[in-house]
Amino acid sequence: MSPSTTSRRRSPSTIRTSYELRLPALEVHQGPNRTLYSFAVDGKQLPLFATVSRVHRDENAEIRGYQRPEVLSHIASIRRYIESEEPMIPNALVIAFDKRVTFEPASRDGKHGEVCPGTLIIPLDSDSAEEEKPGWVVDGQQRCAAIREARVKSFPMCVTAFITDSDAEQRSQFILVNSTKPLPKGLIHELLPTTTGTLPTALQLRRFPASLIDRLNYTKGSPLEGMISTPTTPGGVIKDNSMMKMIENSLSDGALYRFRDASTGEGDAEAMLALLMDYWRAVSSTFDEAWAQPPRRSRLMHGVGIASMGFVMDAIVDRYRRSHLPTEDLARLKDICHWTSGSWQFGANHQLRWNDLQNTPRDIQLLTNYLLLEYKARVWSQPEPRRGKRGRS
Image (cartoon, rainbow, N blue to C red; front, side, top):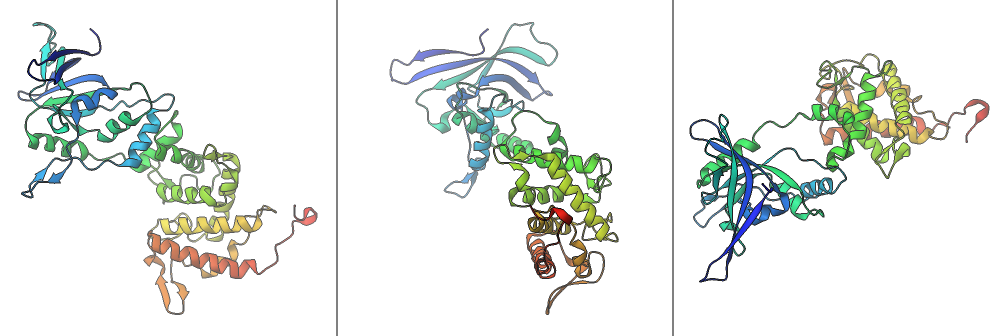
């Protein structure tokens, strides 16, 4: 049996041409009143029989449809992945068919338990409007759009379908499919370093920072060994997402940028790790009373502290990049930092208790600006130290 076949019939009274798309499929019975159909089809053929039911209000303010608008950036990311060398999308699309779609069992005795092989017959009409098509995409509209726009000849997709004429049933399934809990970001970050091949752009960009975090967290002797909270290291006191943001900021235009390979987004991992370990080792010794404490007891271990101290790292490395002294000036900031007690003195009329700082863009910016201004006032006005007879290169 071929993967899909079409038969054509022409009505004598009109010029409209009708087809049938015949697809090998499995009929699966889930309980006494539920039937699903599982099949594969070239994704380029999906627009022939399936469309998207956009959520909107009709003239009577009644809700119609259920799908959100297309997310162009998401579609573009999936399209690039489909156009890569070895794409694979194992999760099936979900399509709701109306009752014009039928199923023919392969044989009378071909049923195996609750599963029956056969052929799904989908009527096609070359002149039908979108709303007249027999199928509606319940889950996978971004993938459908990406396949439609991808510069590939074909891209087969797995589909799970059910047959109903009820809009309410379609809407219920849409909510059920899209309300499931997504994978925790921490699990994704921890798995990324061990992945291969092309990933969607957002994940591809995070794979290298995630590998640095993995090395920092699990390298013997690292100042951050076992301190970054992940699904396999739940006792860590630093949120993995806080470290991710700190490293991404530095890779973008900070201390790690000079080791970065712009063509790949990765770079000299060993040089980056050496710098990160040297810096955070200096942080741990300078602020020893605040180090390795839970975030509720130390704002140094909190997201606001990790982010702001990351920007301080960038500033120190920028000052000493020629003599490679990225850590020696932290002690000059010790007396103004209130990680575990007291109040931060941001100005004559602006003080905040140590634990009032939160992991918000506003507080991160406030603390970063304060630390960088104090660093420049206390350190940049001093002559750059010499390195013995080597001097400056």
